[in-house]
Length: 204
Image 1 (cartoon, one colour):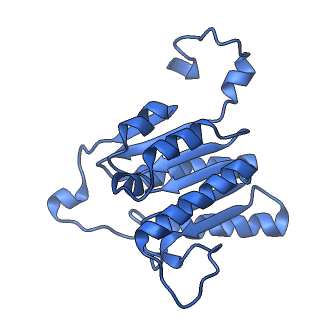
Image 2 (cartoon, rainbow, N blue to C red):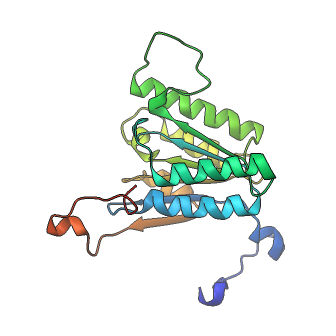
């Protein structure tokens, strides 16, 4: 795709502008690190465009405080204070989804994942956001916690101009087929190959 020009122009009845602004389903998969990192890079661009953002983290521990979470929450506060950029909403499964009003009980991971997906569906139907990151969402599908067929059908039928990015290893072939952009992260070299553990500023 030299200079950002498509190799072919489909006969789909759309104008160049309409085709360019079509909402995308993006999947970042593969064995190598960088899937979430790349997704949050896109999130920064969405913030700059003024698109309301929501992040759902389906697997990462609620106790982890990653650099991208801190940075994007700060950008959300900046928007609240100045109007610059866009609002940012962040949900972590391990914290207990914020819309669940139960007290004194802790749902299982599978139930939490299903409730998280149910809220994503409600948000999509309401066109609540313009940019969605479903971080590590391939795992609930792989583990059978969430029905992949329902995910694919819901995303295919989502209304409006809502971009969705899904990250995680072992993306289901049905999700890959439905996506507009798929990246598979492949390792060439990694510091762990020579015994070096992860470090702040690189891994989190």
